[in-house]
Image (cartoon, rainbow, N blue to C red):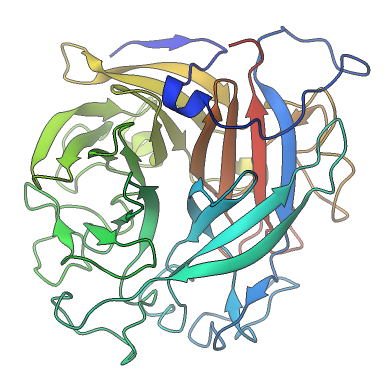
Length: 410
């Protein structure tokens, strides 16, 4: 596999018709950099303590060691975004949390939802840097479609039932979710109602949480990354981690799933950037989005947070460019641990003691795992704050951060 370094991102024509996320900055006051270098163009932050209507949650989670979060919360936390797609109009997005508090045992009172959000990005031209939370999609299942017993008699899915980590919308408006407990693909209509039984992955890929047994995929190493083709007819899946028995720890399998025929195709391998097997096991593929029929953007990250969040990058891969080792080639798009912020949109600090802000902006949350391709020159990324973990500030539970990265002139 070859890895090259570059500083631009090309976005497919389908995505190019979308509106710009943030207004373009003027040259005044900008730190000198290459005209086409990626840089931080916008940032919006949703407070960690944000809740939405619903029953209390977190009764089974360990006590929170960090303010302002305490468990159980008064109602449902709006936290931990693992995927994002377009909303119902300009400026709105549908952002999906994961299973809640990290495991089945701690998350049975966390309802699986996706929230409509509207960020008002702070940019060089203004903006409040806040995020408005609207209504939500609540995921549920008809009684006959789930092959195992679930928590709630009202058929609302919880974080003890599934662990949603990636979300896509097809051209009919149906929602496709990548889950880690199976791992499975879950197919819902636009209202969140399950349309078919969980779709098992090929080659007997199963996590320890799969009731069928026979673990081949480690816990929390399933479908963090699932992209949809521009025609909406196929999904591209990249496993987050290596298989449990893999001798080459750098390999992450890539599959394609035809949503019309139900057929899986093994496409190629993705190889993480690491110098040893141990380092490879600490590299995670956390999201992917297609930019045309064969090219994808991929987030690859380490497991650090705050000062230890040192490796998190966006790469471009090409499914039609496969090396002799069976792996796709990849090229560097942006280093998320060191994003130039020439307009200082990350300042001032929101909480005293915030780190990784200023002329070089660092994505400091542990899990950067939501990627949305907005247009030919802008990417929107969101953090899973793993409530109540700390990264941006060692004394506080992480807020949910959304950032816009712009690469001018593409």
